[in-house]
Length: 110
Length: 111
Image (cartoon, rainbow over all chains, first blue to last red):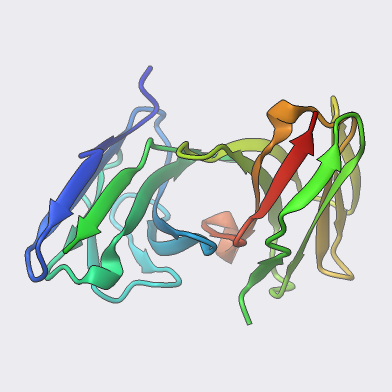
């Protein structure tokens, strides 16, 4: 049972490049989330999907897009990466109670 | 104003002491409240969840919720060096689907 799997674990991008972070969960959860974590800022919600077919903006959605591909998968896309998007990105899924997190993606934009 | 506020710390306590972590939230519609622990370089993991006013105990951990004061706390009794981590307070809104985190409090337990 893998839980929540994120890929890639590390990525370096040049300013202006695009990329997609992938997330998949095998716990049959309805809700999925993307957070970013910066030093001293805790986890900030980028987008979330309460159920398959729906997505909503979180606290810091600018510069990102998401796709809830199916119940298992929720991807995060950076269309034109900026140095301000250097961060650790966490995907999470949630059933009726707690959220379970992936291992994180450390993204550096140079 | 951030929706979930925590003292960033660091909070330093001696081994065996009680560590007290506090959190306030701004949305009175908040329904569920969580404490997560995050070790450096790792993912957050759930310690406690609480949904109604009062205390909830689980081993050395006690969560306290006061909805009137919009206040959540976590007490760690008999603190151990292995408890040294960042503790994140989280609140669920919008029917429980939207979960917002505080900035976290760093706890150091000195042996």
